[in-house]
Each structure stands twice: as C-alpha cells, then as structure tokens.
Length: 252
Image (cartoon, rainbow, N blue to C red):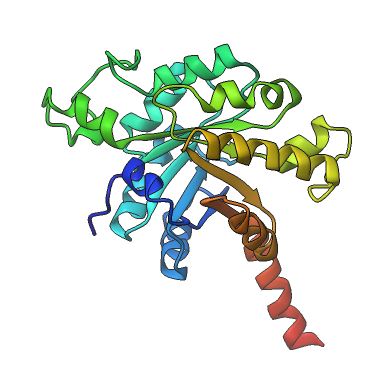
C-alpha cells in the first residue's frame, strides 16, 4: 500500500493515531497495523532494538500500510540520519534541551540547502537507486518532530516551534511530570498547563502537536485540544493488560 508522504499527512490536520513499540518484532508491527492504527513509533530510546532490527520493522510497517516513525536515541545527527536512511517516514527526537539543540536536530534531518544531513543515495530510503533527485524528495517527504520533555525546552517552546523545516513537537508528559516536580502525575495541573502551552505554540506556527497518551480517554482529551498525533500507550503494557484480562476471565 502506498501512503502519502508523512509530511503531507501531518499537514492535513487529520488526527494520526499511533502507539509506541518497545518490542522489536515484525509480528508486533503487523498486529498494530491490523488493529487499525495509522502509525507505529519504533522506540529506540527505550526499546531493545538494535540497528539491524530497524530495517525489517520499517518494511513491515510499510507493507501493512502504516507509517513507521522512529524515536531515535538522541539528537546526535548520525542517529537521525541513520533512521531516515533506513526508511523511516519520520523521526521523533527526544530530550531536546535548548533552541540550539533543536535547530541542530532539524538540520540533521534535511539535506542541503535546508540542512546538513549526510548525503548517500544508495540507502533503503532511496530504494538503493543512486538518484540525485532523491535528496529533494526526502526533504519534501520525511518528517521530523522534536520532543519537549523538560523545563528548558518548555521555556523555549515558542522559538522551537517556529524553526524552519520543523514538522511538529511531540510532548512527553511522563518526563515533563518529573521535570516539574510531580513524578508520574501526567494529569497534574502543572503538567496540563505545560502541555497546553506547547499545543498553543504548535497552533501558532501551524505545525503538528503530538503527545503520549496513556489511555484512550487521555488521547480523546488531547485531540479535542488540537493534538493531531496522539500515541496511545505502548505494545508492552497493552499486551500485559490483555493477557492479565485473559487469565482473569479463565480463573475468576
């Protein structure tokens, strides 16, 4: 199935429903797609994925008709470029700490003249073709979102959201809760205020607002507030809850 480019899809403003994948399994990617999600976020930051696992997972997502996003381990340019070279539709960059770091990350996702991504047209993302036209196509199609998870990035939210060639900001409420002194309380007023501040910055700059939502109810709430990339839960906790429910039905 051929999907529109992720950058194009994000600009449409129609909510794109995702979930995080911590388990490095092709079958998990397929199950997420078959369940009806629009995208899967392959989590290199917290998952047990090695670089050799990334290609098959991306191919599985594309084969099943969903967008493969990759949350890279850090804002290092080589991390960002490698995920995009492997064929990711977009990257999510965690733990952005400043405007300068945000600008560096965005530039790492774009080829010249828009950025300084390392140029190699013989990779999976280019269909191994060597076509020089691919550089402009990649700049047009591949998405980059930056994560705001701490106080320093929160203070610079408006400036970060206005960066050229940035597609969106992805909000990490769990890390925000720790940074704001209320660990784990994702619904705390301090955290909610921070989230709404970031959403407002995204709206003002006409870019995507994404967020991790621990529950369907939280996802619905944030969609109503203008989030268009809600990532509901993660494969590990989803499977654990389903398995516990199954055991309970038999034993109780």
